[in-house]
Structure formats: structure tokens, C-alpha cells
Length: 249
Image (cartoon, rainbow, N blue to C red; front, top):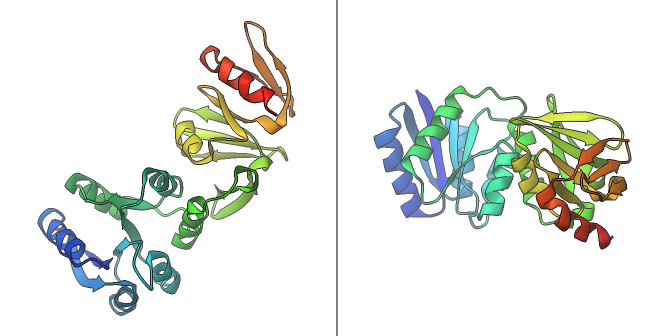
């Protein structure tokens, strides 16, 4: 039996989620329902739950504050959020589970099942730090990107990334220093987080940093040569947009 705590500052949201869990997640025991972050922190420390359903936007003490105060407690978190689509992509990139309000029953059941089965590869603290980093609005030139490496998260400037190559459901990130990092994310997922200057999707399987292009062949079989010597074909349906972008730099 999973012991769970629900934390939200909206009474209706608390009641609805409680009812949904009781009706559709019978292996989850709700040990506390908390109105606001302060009560949530106290409940986590008192009951030491396996799982916490946590709202982000709460007055005075928000969801991130709750996590910072309870990092030493061993539980999994599922955010309940009304965030926009950009933020949802950040949740996915950071491997954080979430439920978008209004909460769908199937999504709820799937999130609970994942919480039961998934094996943690790195700490909740690392995941949250990554999420916060992705949520912060930054200029692309100064963007800091968190990339997992075993049990660690390493942070890089956008311009330290040379190119990213798709490999089915994985993405290989090639850094300027010659290092390669493999993520269990599709190239589409990665692109949604770091798209825009200085990155450009020149091919279905390649996302490149235009600041690290050495030369461009513009003929019928157009391609770019990166500073590491790698040649990458430019997709025909992306060629015009790419060359237009290139002329601006």
C-alpha cells in the first residue's frame, strides 16, 4: 500500500483529487490532506509518505519550497499543476511526474503506476534542480542546460553544445570538448526545450548549434561541416529556412 500526502492551497482541488484517488487508485492510502505548503511540510515530516501529490503555485510557501524543506525524506513526487505547455515540456525533460489540472483519471492511474515501478537513477533533489533550471526564462546565449551523467547532473552553457543526433528514442549530445552524452529522450523532446537561436534542426535526425558551423555546401545535396569535421546533410524542406537564418549571423 502506498502512503500518500496531498498538498494544495485550493480546497476544491484537494477534495477532487482525494475522491479520484479513493475511487480509482485503491492501492493508495491518503494519510494527510494539506491546505498549503506549511501544512504539507509538517505532514511529510510526520507521516513520511511514499508519495506526495504537490501543487506548485501556492501563496507564501510554494511547491519548490516544500521540496527544499523535505529533501531528506524519501518519497516520490507528482506535481499537480495548471502550468502552460512550455512548462510541461520542462517537466518531461527533467523526468518529473506531473498531472495537468483538471486531472484526468487515466493520467492519474498511470502516474501512480509509474511511481510504484520506476527505478530512480538520481535523486529527487537533482531532478528538481534540473526542473527549476529549465523553467527559468533565460536568453539562449546564456542558457544553462542540465544534462544527466550517471548519478550526476552537469550544467553546460548552450554554446558548449556542438550538435545533437537522434538515435530512435535516444539523443546523443556532442559537446565542443569532444564528450558525448546520451539521453533517453527523443530529439523532438530535446528540441522543445532548447529550440531557437543558436540551435537549428537541419535534418530529421540532427539539431546543430549554428555558432559551430565551419562551412556550408549550398548545392542540390546541401550539407554543413561542423567545427569538429562532421558533415551533416541539410534536409530539402529545411534548406531555405536554414540558409535564411544563416545569412543573419
